[in-house]
Image 1: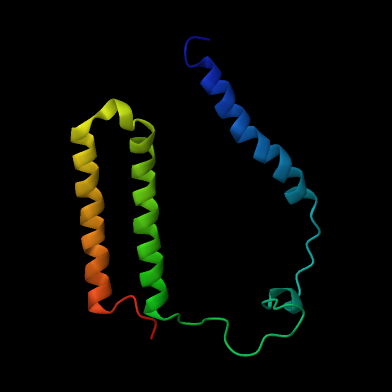
Image 2 (image 1 turned 90 degrees about the horizontal axis):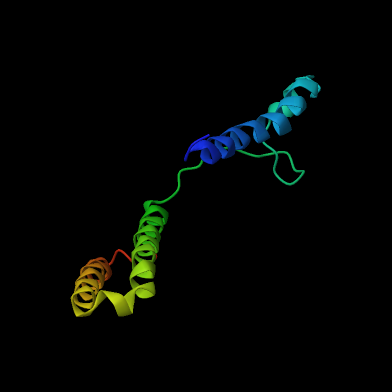
Length: 117
């Protein structure tokens, strides 16, 4: 099998398991389409109005800021685990990294992008 044989077995299992689980359900499902089945479901109440709603841009800004700081924690975690081995240079690099992110946050805050309107 070689070095990658076990990886191949896991890959085959990862591909076969969903097919074995969902395949019979797809083949055995009842197919009786009706107009009632194609309407959006809202807690048992018939929907009113269009299901397409435009969200404000502020939601996307908060989502983007969340992603930026979430990725920051992904970069900070390995650094924190290996902090003792990395030394003072890595500490200075991390301060520069966090400083750049803090400058970006300060800029967004000062510009007024973080106030809910």
